[in-house]
Image (cartoon, rainbow, N blue to C red):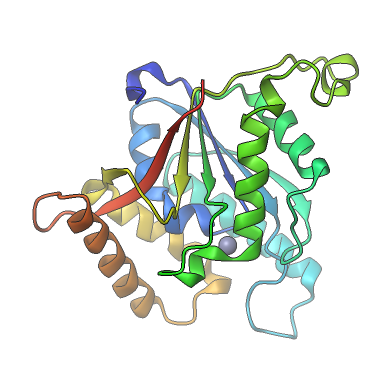
Length: 239
Ligand SMILES: [Zn+2]
């Protein structure tokens, strides 16, 4: 596994605004504190979110982009790219693979974070179809597309984007996590980041309790000392 001191840039790919904050915000705060350049690429604007029919979907998309931007600030991230795919209808198409390959070649990250393409039968809420589609397309973009000169050759010929090899992928919400990050010290910032997604939160105290339970469970699963909190990832060597 790469040591964080070997990592200059990290690209975090997600399906919806708020996914990153549920799965990885505490870890990301640690990375930015260590001086690593972290950027977000969010495939949809989350326009199918919320439950208020009086808000137009275009307004919801704008609101959720603003919420995600505020959430990112809580954990030291200021570069966000929204690809604008329709929320709830994402598929792992060649077009999405090309779009993610473009972003990887532009950002040139050492490490990519993405959702799991697998269905987690133990935690059905993490296995939204958009998450699985984005996870699948992101892994395909890491290998082989973004490193292969002959995959989407127009990225090089028309956009001058050289192939790039991502060295490591951290899969979020994997059914088989292999690495547990102690986020006890950054948990407050994770909560603050999630609080920024106000349009999606019906009951903030219930959310906080859920986060406490989730991060405590993951710390126990990872064998961390009692009273610690964790986020979990499946780490893949990719280059
Ligand atoms: Zn989501």
